[in-house]
Image (cartoon, rainbow, N blue to C red):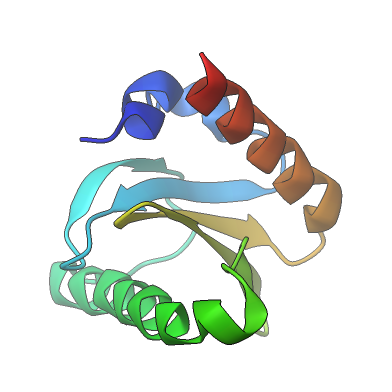
Length: 120
């Protein structure tokens, strides 16, 4: 598991107002660590496909790093939730947020925290 995952601990304190799920997925789409509220119901198979989708998206985005630079994060906005994916080496941090949560300041705070962890 990456140093980011070890530093974040993925416990309930990460699930503040508006954050429904936080997790770290491996390059193969497997959940390495995570925690969530019971606000969205997905079967185990659906969760596996959900994570694989974001893992594949991050892998495909790497093909354009030379042209556009490395992706800092991606946002998927759905009717009920907003999903933020933040690439971390070969892993991907996933945050599922309430659609009303002000995500830009939250994401910038997360990126600052990750940068701080990497500089330790």
